Image 1 (cartoon, each protein chain N blue to C red):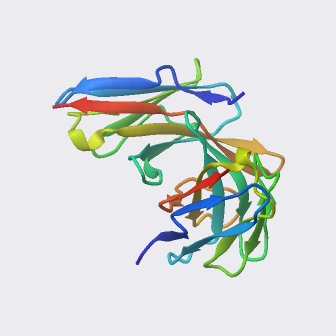
Image 2: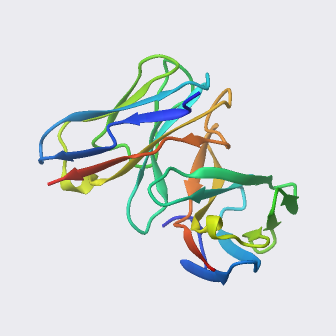
Amino acid sequence: NAGVTQTPKFQVLKTGQSMTLQCAQDMNHNSMYWYRQDPGMGLRLIYYSASEGTTDKGEVPNGYNVSRLNKREFSLRLESAAPSQTSVYFCASSNRPRGLSYEQYFGPGTRLTVT
Amino acid sequence: GESVGLHLPTLSVQEGDNSIINCAYSNSASDYFIWYKQESGKGPQFIIDIRSNMDKRQGQRVTVLLNKTVKHLSLQIAATQPGDSAVYFCAEILPQGGSEKLVFGKGTKLTVNP
């Protein structure tokens, strides 16, 4: 049981490049989330998926897209990376049947730098 | 700005002492609060939660207190150990148009000195 896994762990992009961050969970959770964490700030929700087949915007969705590929996987895509997207990205999952949830399990994070 | 915040960005304690980490929130409609611990280079880890109809909840070496009158939340760690050194975040659940929103505070960095 690996919990929540994320790939890659580190990534450097040039402005304008695109990439997809991958997330998978093996806990059979319904809900999955993407957050970003900037220095001196708490986590901010980018997008979430309350169940397979649904996605909703969080607090800071601009510049990102997501795909809930199946119950296990939730990917985050940057179509045209900007320096403002330099951050640490965390994926999380929870088992609340609808909406956001409380006890969220987090992955180890992806450290992204955009130059 | 964020409705959830912290009074102190850093806290330094001696090993064996009790630690108290504070959090203020501004939305009286929030009905659920959570504390997370984040060690360096890792994702946040759930510690304890409390519903708004409770004043106190205890876990293993941790206690969360909720004062709804002054919209204040605290996390108490008993007999603090070096392994408790981390950044601690409070988070609140805000009802939002039929859905809910989880809002994190900025975090308090706890350092435990041997």
